[in-house]
Image (tube, rainbow, N blue to C red; front, top):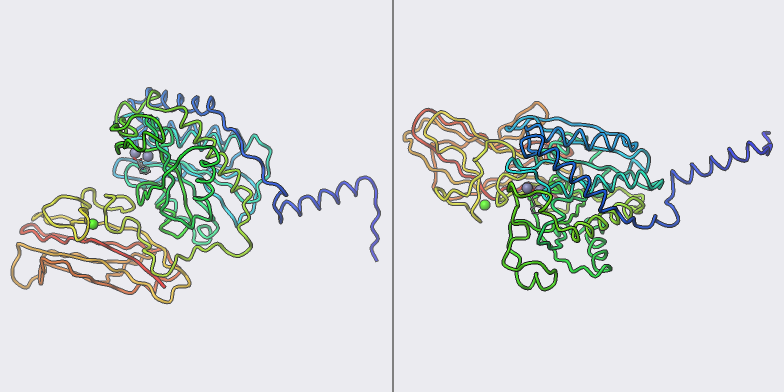
Length: 478
Ligand code: PHE
Ligand code: ZN
Ligand code: ZN
Ligand code: CA
C-alpha cells in the first residue's frame, strides 16, 4: 500500500494540484470586480487608427492599405500582451480582407465568451466613431484583461472583423468556416459597433432577448450608473447577426448613427434634438473630433463590466441552447430590408429599386431583368439543427418576361450547396411566368446538422429580359 510522505516539497506540490484542479472545474468564489477601463488608453488607440488612416489615403477600408495596417497594429498589441492571435483572410469584391481573432489562453474551452467589433471603415473616411470606437474599446478590454492577472472561468475570445461595411462579410466568413462543434461552444457574442457617437444615445440590442442574460445585464449596468437606455432592434445591421443566425446568444450596444435624435431623446440624454446621433456617419468627417468622450468613457466601462462579468459566468454544465426555437427563421435579413447584409453574391441584386415590387417592405432580390447575357446570385449560409425533425426553405417569387414560347432561355435555380455538392431544388424560367408573388417550400431535412448555403442563381441569355424577384425567404426547423 502506498503511503503519503508529507515533506515540505510534496505539500507544495499537492496544494498546486488542488489549485489547478479547482481552476479547471469551479469558478472563483467571487467574480473579479468590474474594471475602470482607461479613456486615455482608448483615446490613444483611436489616435493610432486616425494616424493609420491619414498615412494611407484617409481611410481604413476593405482592400485599402489602411485596413491591413490597422489589423497589423491591433495584432501586435495583442501578441505582446500574451494572446494567441489568428488572421483569417478572405476575398471580397473590394479586395482581400482579414479577420483578427485573439484567444486568451485558458478558461473552460466548452464555454467561450466572445467580444467583437468591426475594424474596417468605409472608403469615405477614417472611421473613428464607426468603428474605431468599438475596435479600440474591445482592444482595451482585452489588454486590461491580460494585465489584470485574473483567471477566467470561461474561455475569452476577442475578434476584429473585416469587411463589415460590405455586408458583414468577415463575421459571416468566420462563422461559416467555424466547425459546428466550435460554434456550439460559444455561449455569448457581444458586438460593439459605434460606441462614441458625437450626439449620443444608448441603444441596447434587443434582437435576441435570450442572450444568455447579457442584454439584461447590460441594461442593469446602465441603470445602476443612472444612464437612461433604449432598446434597438438592429436586425442584420452589424456582425452579431452572423452569430445570431446560428442560434448563438448575442447582445451589443450602439450609440446611434444617421437617425435624428428626437426632443424626448435629447431631454433624457442631452445633446441636440433634430440632429443625427452621428452627423458624420460614413463621411470623411468621422475623425477624432467626431467622438463624445463622455459617452465613450461610459461605454468602455460598460464593455469592461460585461467582459469581466461573463468571464466568470456560470453557464451550467448542460450544453447551451444553440438549437434555435422551433419555427425561428434561421436566415438573417430574410426579407432583404437591411439591404445586402448577411447575403453574399451579386452586388446590386438586392435592391429597393421600384421597377419591380417587393412582396413586403421595399427591398427584395431582383435577379435578371437585364435582357443581356448575365449570371447573378444571392446566397446565405445556414446551419440546420442536428436535432431537427423537420426543416424547410421557403421563399416568395415573382417572375415576368419579355420572352415568349416554350423554350427556357432564362432560368433561376434554387440551390443548396453542401460542401462541394450543389443540389438544385427548383428551376424557374421564362416559361410560365406569373407577375404575382407565389410561395414555394422545399425540405432541407436531409441537411440536418450541416452548414449549407442556400443560393438563388440566375442565368439570362443575350436578349429579352426575364425578372426573377425573390422576397421573404425563410429557413425554419422544428
Ligand atoms: N453596422 C453599421 C455600420 O457599420 C452601424 C450600425 C450598428 C447600425 C448597429 C445599426 C446598429 O455602418
Ligand atoms: Zn458603417
Ligand atoms: Zn459600423
Ligand atoms: Ca422585402
